[in-house]
Structures are given as C-alpha cells and as structure tokens.
Length: 257
Length: 262
Image (tube, rainbow over all chains, first blue to last red):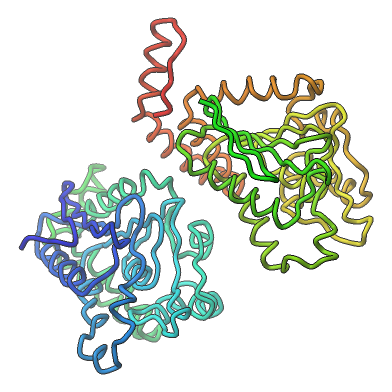
C-alpha cells in the first residue's frame, strides 16, 4: 500500500512512522489514521521489526483538526464516522511504540502521543487538549489517559482549561521520558527503540501488556496476570538463552521463540 | 546594510548582524507605557525571527536605560493587568530563551521593569552612572518582572534580598564587582564597546552560541545528569555543522576560522 499522509521507513529493527501533512500541522484526518493503522499492523506482523517510533518530524507532532470541516457536523455524523474509534490500531500494536514529539502535540495529536509507550520530547514540545475552547471535549482518550498518567488535578487543568504545557513541565509530571534538543528528538527516540528492539520480543510484549493492564484492573488481578506471564516466559527459548548468556557473561541472542 | 526602522518610541536598527533596539522615550526616561511596551514586544519578536539578526542589543535613548513602568499608565488605567502581564512575560521570556545572545547596554538607570529587562538579557554593559533600582518596597509592593529568579542567580539570595528589602540602588561599579554587570565602560565608550562585542559574536559560530544559551537555560532547571545529557545531544548537532569543520580545519592550519553560523 502506498501512503499519502505518512512516511514509513526502516532503521534496522526499528520502524519509523512520520506523520506527513506539514501544511496542516499534521492534522489527523480519518485517511491519515487509516494509513497509520495499516502501517502499524504491518510493522507488528514483521518479525524483523522489534519496536517503532511515531513522530511528526522536527517542527510539529500533530496539532489541530480540520475545524472548518467539523463545524457543521451533527452528533449522528460524528457517531457514524466514529473517527476516534478507529484509533484502536495504535493501542493494538504489540511492540514498543516510542513517540518523538517536537512542537505542538495538541488535541488528537496529544492523545496520539499519549497512546504511545514512551515519549521523547524535544525542547520545543507542547502538550495540550484545547478542545474545551471550541465547546467540545477530547474524543480520543484525553480525559482518560491524562488522569491515569499525571493524576486527577493536572488532568482537570489540561482538559478544563485547555492551555498547553511545555516539555519541561511534561517531564516533571512524568508524561515524558526524556527532554532533548529538538534537532535530535527523532534520533534519540530511534536509539531508544533500538535498545528496546534488542530485548527479548516475547518478554517485551508481555511486559507492555502487563503495564497497560495495570491501568485497567484491580491490583490483585493485575498481579495474577503478571504472575502468569512471568511463569509462561519460562517456556520460551529466549528465557533459556537470556539466563545462559548472563551466566556465560556474553550478550544474549533473542529469537522471539 | 544598516536598516533603521523608526517607531516613535522604539528605534530598531540592524547592522553587522546585530539588532539595536533603542527605547526612545527620553522625556519620560524611557518608562514603559502601553505604546512603548507593545513596540518593544514587537521589536524583540522581530529580532528573534529575523535570520539576519544574530545578536540583540537593548539600549536606552537619553540619560536613562529605562525608569520602569510609567506610573501615569496605572493612574490612567490604560492597560488591564492581564494584558500588561502578558506583554512583560512574553518580552522577558523571549530575551532569556531566544537562541541568540542578548545584551543590555545600560546607558543609565534601570529601575523596576527596566532592571528586569536588563537582568533578562544574557550580558550587561554599563556606564559608571548606571544603577539598578529595585525600589518596589518603597511603595509597598513586592518584586516582579522575574527578578526574584534572575537576581538571586546572579548575586546570591542574601544579597538579592538585601536589595529587595531596602530598595537601595545598586551602582554600576558594585554591580560589576558582584557579577551583575559584565563590564563598566565610560559613557562615550558604551556603544563602541558593545558594538565591538556584539559584532564579534555575530560574526562567530552563531549556532554554537545559540546552543550554548539553550544548554545553560536547560541546566538552570536540571540535575547535573540531565544537563550533561542535553549538552551531549546538542554537541552532536554542532559536530554535524559546517562551523565545526571550519573551526577544526582553521585550528590545524593555524589560521583564524571563518564561521558561517551553520
């Protein structure tokens, strides 16, 4: 499939997806989201890919929706389009997904960043949910993922006041893993993804699943699920290889088996 | 090359890669009223965006640098507090964070928001008659314009609090000794000396200067390890630049480097 709104590249074991609608600040159209889902599905299925990076490039991550297009829509239009429902491909991705955010990540763009597993922010990054200023609220997880990330009070501020926060505040709040010069945000994210891709694939997948489950279940259930995955991994070749390599003081060679 | 843009209250001139922004309301000692404040915000914004501008100099016309906020404006209530606050914060933050050196040339007194402007710049040159005045306390006010952040970082908490508590003016010579002012020069030497410095910086490896400022600003709010991480990444960017290649080549060839700012 040829993509019109995104670029997909490979950097060794890392798939790099770049949102590519610079003229509209990478506004997240349904077509773009469809392409993104398709590209992520393909990277997920590719055994040569260990992790992925999602970025908007050096200037902007993703800001703005097409407000002119949205202004006259009805509730039924919105329901039938179910635009935000189509974002599930992003959270269905089973490998580590690192967001590389420069400039604005606003509205849907911010929610997209929040769906990723780690976030590397350039010093120019701004995160926010300005929907309230248009008389609506976030529709792709903003009201749900912010409180699960930074707690209720900051989440209220972000969603109710609609003012973006900068990279340093996002870092202090724990939303962002690293703040780096904007020129190297993508490179640092790719480097991080490469480090992740060198880990045992099955363990990575189950660890990601377990952490995500922590946000959805009571502790006892989460702990039980974690334990099962922990035991299960002793049935993998990678566990044998990992421990043997540790004892033999060499680097492990994981196969994802 | 020189291009002068005249506004009634701010004179802007770009020469030799340096934007000279002159507060030009000498009859009111360059006190900031709504007009001067707005013009200054726009001038600094333009200087930040103009790729020809490598260094920014703030200076005052007449015998003062800037006497502070024009009290008349408070009496007349011509600006709302949120507007005034937004302008000042945009101005001060921009001077402190734009990736270009900013220099305050203190031709005279810098009081209140005038002192804040000077302290938000990277460097300060001053004439012997110049002084910083943080006299908010004399009219029952607290400090503003970011000086609670800038001044203690320059001279330490104890000395900054003493000045804030007493409202005692800080003369140029003492300011130089304390490290607030980089150099005190005679009045007739202020502009030539600042020009010499500013043009030297402007013809240097300006991307490196911007990177240095970004690193220092990042470090002010970081742990040692975070600062080193940020430095390391920016160093990597600089190493890709033409100026670095030229710098190394010139060093090996034992000649002066010709930097392009790339």
